[in-house]
Length: 78
Image (cartoon, rainbow, N blue to C red; front, top):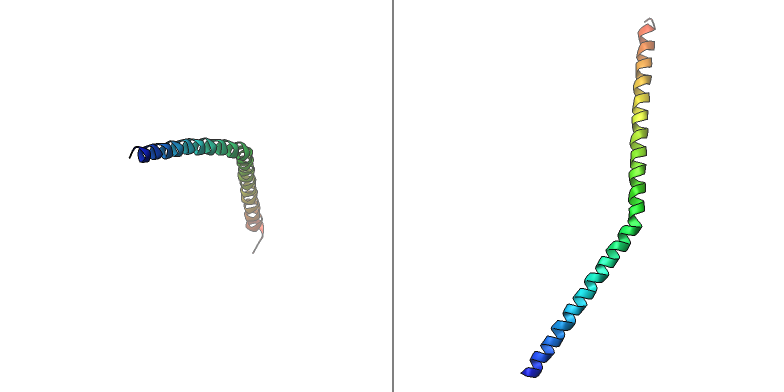
């Protein structure tokens, strides 16, 4: 019986050590992934902001063109 308990204790200890090692490896992988993706996330934010600005400029230009077309059509006799 003592041998079985010793074996069980050894296996539990080994599993706990393996679990701890896996947790540490996961944390390392998370840090590495974060380090690699942080610049991409910043670039994505920058591109998103640039796109939003470009869309706003296009929208403003379209409104101005519509206003000019309206002025022109109002002055053309039927």
